[in-house]
View (cartoon, helix red, strand yellow):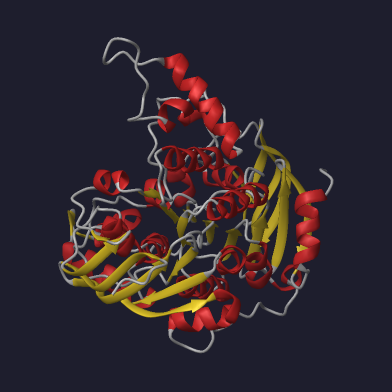
Length: 503
């Protein structure tokens, strides 16, 4: 039976992949014109469910009814024609085309002769639609030259031009600044007023409570339940997601680091034009040094300079008090520095390679018997790291691309832990992973620090930085504008982030 105000009804939906039951007997109803949050830890089944709705995967069992008609899409194009549009975490636009060309792709007005596209008419129509819907996007600009926020806005506008009635947004605020997030929320609320239904997927629970009407939680491929957001608290959602009362808090150390720990890394006047300006700081063995700033502040650029991925224009780096010249990541690894990059998929993993090979790659010199690489040693090392970090895999031969985001991140961490670095840089290690995996990464960082590692923890998430760090550095426009001890308030950090003076 179809409830009148329901746009999508799912009954008994199941989906399995080799060795994995991704979804099991899902029942879900999404109402017309609501903002519905889809929640759950990585590996809970959210992506699989969305891909079935959008026509990427066929279901193994169950029924889907969209707009009072049973659907069985053969491709995302079929779903798109029916009014279901998905905005992926990573853009699906054509980078070489302009904003206007992407928006009207498939709807291009032609001249008198068939097949001859009327470019001027495209831009006229783009102007009319943008003005009507309140979008301010550069029509002539190629998509590859847009910011992440502009790309997401372009995809939303494209969906509206193509008369989408059901919009799926997968981690839409990932890589956006606070101002861009505010603008995006304004647009989403406007879409709701226009009658569009939005299925909103995010790991940021604060966003759920600001933007959503209802929320559905999945866990281990099963549906836990659907709740009215205004009737629950964040802790209720967390409990549904992780299946336990509370997450274990990670306590910061009590000592004053400078008084009790040896110097691990000292940076003096490090700079790279347009990115990092005369930054100086010291990190100590056994501490978590938090480095925060808004997107584009220079945090990642600073990490890349220390790791030898970029060449500095000036400044010095000291390890254990000794000046070193790090000209490449290979030299950084030789000096005992590991780095978990912000972009784990493109820079941290070989997605088509087996998990055990990803984990042992930086430590191959220790994986040989004589002059021959030993698979037995690699598998033993992989097994030890999988058990140590609680990585969920079907086998060591599983491809890294088939893991959930949280488990991919753990594999990246594992490959560096295997080499026992004395300094470990983690650039946004918890971005895009669920609350349970995030807490696990926090525990790993604290354990590393307790064992004497100098941990440089880079994150734009101020609550996370304040919770886990022993000291905090604030970067703004490439400058180091503040250094704070453990216990500083989030308010003080945010003030320095947004209003502090450059030094």
